[in-house]
Length: 321
Image (cartoon, rainbow, N blue to C red; front, side, top):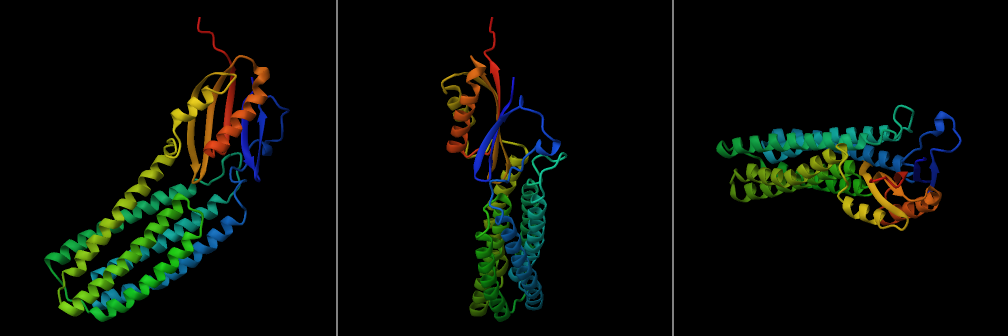
């Protein structure tokens, strides 16, 4: 009995059966990204490169100023921006790798490179948070003098730069990789804001502990988002059911479709951000009805749940005697 398989292709969808006439090996797989606008990826790459150049240049300026002025808030923000530059480079590489077409070795293509990049970026963020926290506790117990005016000037420029970077990245596709990069930029913005506030307070009061205290606040704010990115990345790589879908609800809809007796071996997982797949075995009374049932199920799964890759195995009713 044949496998019913359907997927979107350039805005539409089609289905086919394993019983069809054999085709050349290059037609045995399809690009799961065919339904994505082909101009989106180059635009994403250009945006990432622009953000990477801006971030790298300013990280050098901020790092020198932080070292010269003695500001931990500025130094920690500079270190975070260096990690941002690495993350943007990694993210750009992942987008480029993800554009490679499917092959006989990688039939889905390499789009999960973006998920792996998100995981690595999350780990990098976690490392930055730990370094900031350790140094902040050291500075609280042993305060060091800070020159507030240079800190305030560079921090203001940093906020402007990070606002621009945030705007650039916000116009990209909202995948897990992009979200991880946006968290980096948000952390930078908050770091610059903390450095500015610390500079003002030190300028007005001379109270040095505010610098490491605000650095700790920024690290704490970043931690929650970082843990979320790590959790979601691992969930995708472990092929967990997408959070936006209930496996039980989809199973009930399939089971209650007229002409279907039972459903088993139902699996739903994420291929990459915004692209889901489903496979299941469908018990029916009559295989002659399968082409019509396949179209019905395909329409429901794509329309109600936005599932892109659908593979359904029809089976005659099992004998329970």
